[in-house]
Amino acid sequence: MEPATKKPKLEDNNDGKLSGDINSSDDVPFLKEKDVGICEYINSLPGFHAVLKQRYSDFIVNEIDKSGNVVHLTSKEYIPEEKPVEEKPVEESISGEVHSLTDTQRQAIDDGILTETDIEKLQGLVASENKKESVILKKKDINDKERRTQIHSSIRKCFTGLESSTTEYEGEKVIKVEKTSGGGGRSRNRYFNPWPADREDFCKFVLYKTAKDTMNAIWLIAKQLKCNHSLFNYAGTKDKRAKTTQEVTAYRITAEKLAGLNKSLVGIVLGNFRALLQNNYKKAVELILKPRPGEDDLTTSSRKIWTDTRDAREVLKKMPKRCTVERALLEGLLKEGENFSNALTRVPRGTRLMYLHSYQSYIWNSSEEIEDGDRHIGSWYTSMLKEDNLTPECFRHKNKSYALPGDYRKIVIQPQDVSWQTYMYNDVNCSLAMSDLDILENVPEPQSDKDGKFKALKIEMSLPASCYATMGVREILKCETSSAYQKKGNDPSYKGSDVEQSHTTQSEKT
Image 1 (cartoon, rainbow, N blue to C red):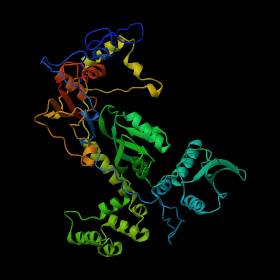
Image 2: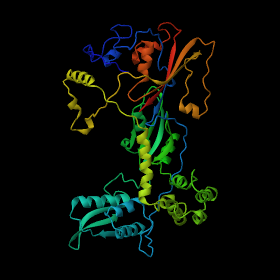
Image 3: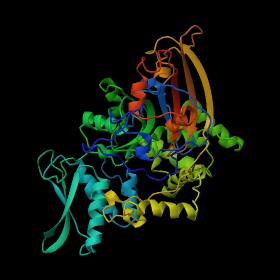
Image 4: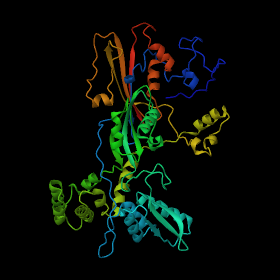
């Protein structure tokens, strides 16, 4: 809640500082609410004095994902990933069909960028122990620059450890493919990351932090991993003076490496690791072969054999021929053993894509609609910008780093899942709210002391994106929420020693 009011002028004391203090004196300069446009209350009900955020545990924030689920840290462990798929020499059947291909290699063939012969040559190059060996690929459309770019890109995606270039060979333009050098050699990317082609690029995890804002926490994680912080993405920055939980995605960083940071990070805990789309090939196999309701007895009994024995050969003997997906997967398991990733490539690509698209549909169906604002708000918005010699077009900056597309948001919202509870207590340093880490580590839940000399109010609420619990508490208290005011309020000598303490637990939807 941020009331729409006329923007105030900032008072400057010729020293670059704002004037005013919590006692309406000009002696102590500090930033006040009105300096950032917070000037009104929704109602005229009386408030009361309380202290906010004296301890980090006084403000607990849990992100709410797009499906409406509150994000929690429930585990610091990780599920070991499948071992990287080793490139194998091509195996050909009587029909000449190429086997042991990765999804990316099959896609390159399907798209007509590389041929089966190209793939065979490159697989042989990967398997070769001769570091100086190279492969020449002759392509009919090599004079097309866009086509050459596609070929080079496809080779990089299909084969870890290979790099390609366009050169002259025997009087004609060709693609030359070589092994990348280990270090300081010819590899043009000093940050080269040998990432298996069949491993999903993103790992999603839960970030729990105390006394750090999100950007600082990400910077510390990147520093520990010796990688660029731009490899991490998150929905929004969570408060510094709080205990917060949110989801983060990491690009080409394994769950094992992330989990290992828990031994050295201070005030930061990482957990609930999963790849996107989960990269748990074993689980994918189990989901395809597990029993399903409503199927005929023969199919059900075949699936039960898998559940009981994990014997692909026996299941294949019983599985009806009409179950083409299951049979293709079982044949892959017979050939590849526990290499679940390669076994899944036996399932037709269209079917595998359908699985992914169905999950996309699930996400779409769970999304909320965005409501358009009305034209009067647009006029008010334009006039506000005009005061600073700006227009809405200014935000469509030609430099994308400064471009702000914007969105609509409601001026007033009603919090959901609101609950409150009072506590009596004596120790101002005692935590009165449970964080995710407290629950995970089985910390005893705080109890109210009926003889306590201080009273605390604990409020819980769920809020949509761009709404803030602090503004909700401000509406209740009718007092300044600036840090200077709250710092003064934390002094026991201020307004007497019998100070009421307010604790808020917030869930933000992003």
